[in-house]
Amino acid sequence: MHILIIGAAGMVGRKLTQALLAAGTIAGRDISALTLVDVVAADVPVSDTPISALAADLSLPGTAQTLAATRPDLIFHLAAIVSGEAEADFDKGYRINLDGTRLLLEAIRQEGMKAPYCPRLVFTSSIAVFGAPLPPAIPDDMAHTPLTSYGTQKAICELLLADYSRRGFVDGIGIRLPTVVVRPGKPNKAASGFFSGIIREPLNGMEAVLPVDDSVRHWFASPRSAIGFLLHAAGLDTAPLGQRRNLSMPGLSATIAEEIAALERFGGTKALRLIRREPDETIARIVAGWPQNFDTGRAIALGFRAETSFDDIVRAHIEDELGGQIGNG
Image (cartoon, rainbow, N blue to C red; front, side, top):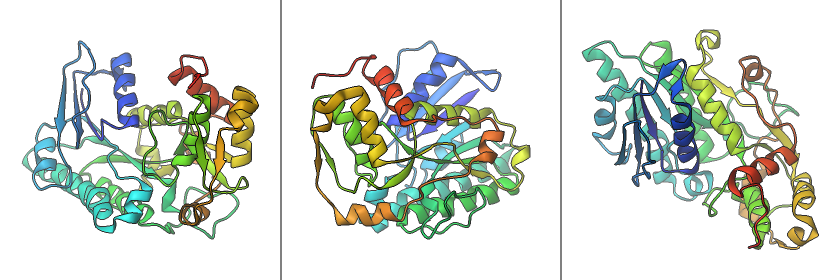
């Protein structure tokens, strides 16, 4: 099986690559080749599996056609600019998040017109496709009401994925990821970045900025769970999905206060003192319109799983990124 990962240089892309190489198979088939694509070439791990890394922009003319011409059996489409950046730069958000996806779908369709070709396409969507006012727990069939450009772009891509799948051009599945915490590495431009920062930085002895109130509630899952979602989606029988090709992933509904309480249990009061409260009206306004809780019975029935406590999320971060030990800064 030839696997293409678009957005391979990002955190999720790197972890997905590692997981695929460790497994060696997916959906009962051996992995014969990996192609890693991002605007900056991804690092190529040492492996017996043939791996190629390309620096390419999916939104530019010709890129999608070149990738589709290699006829990968499985495509993970992870590439996107994050929420804060998409809101700040309207043109860039639509070019990367919408146009790139449309060009990929169309390139696959055109390739299939030459000779039969219908790859599995796993697309990472977002809970940002929903916006206030919202019910206490959002069902999977809730109408899209995005309140950001990022959420709007993801919602449009979900419709495209469903239609191209309905027509038999791709075998698509869209997974709406919770906010992934605790993200390793440096902060990015996502409006949600502080959710990771207030855990990650204090555990490493560094100061973190909290721009919203402790009462803010949100929907979370760990990077470990996110990779599990992607791998499960890749091998899932899509027949039970019918025409509803996009679904919300399981997660954990928690407040900032609950997040900080978990931090204290692992890092003590010393870690708490490293959180600096600095209200940011722009971020607070964006976050206020985001979903807080989901009914993910459909995804759970299909075998998707995530953490059930914030302690589990923090513990996964310590085990996977800190070698089981809290850093000293």
